[in-house]
Amino acid sequence: MISVSDIKTKIRQTTYRLKRDFLAVENIVLVIAIILCLLWTYQSITAMSRNWTLSERLSTEKKSLELLEVEIDTLELENAYYQTEEYQELAARRLAGKQLPGEKMVYLPANSEVAKTKHQSVATKTVEKTYSNFDKWIHFLFPDKF
Figure (tube, helix red, strand yellow):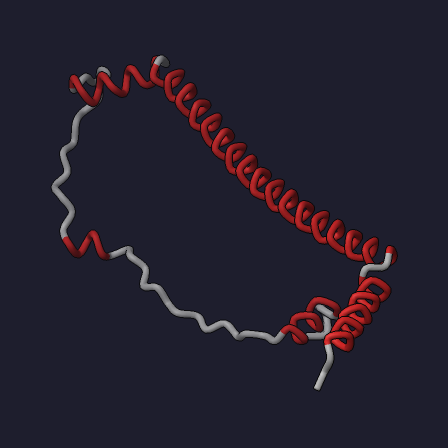
């Protein structure tokens, strides 16, 4: 049977080993260093992720800004065209039926189905040969050999 003094001795030995082996200053410093490294890594990854999302949002905003600037330029050009004499003459001809002296109006009948389909080209399928990555490199490095 185990006596109480044996149990006390075992407890003292266990606490001594824990203090000596696990709670040494070097081990505590090592655990703190590992925790700090993990925190630093986590913060770095979150910062990089945030920077990436912000840069993506910035690039999409820049693209939309450029698109709006192109649309503005197009509308300004259209407004300038609408103010020219050429457009005003064409609009007057179209809307009011005005003609220059000596011009005659010719009304053509609507196109028949044969006339509509006469010049339509039939799409032909071309089968392209697919090359492997190695073949592509060979063609790239030695274009005159093949």
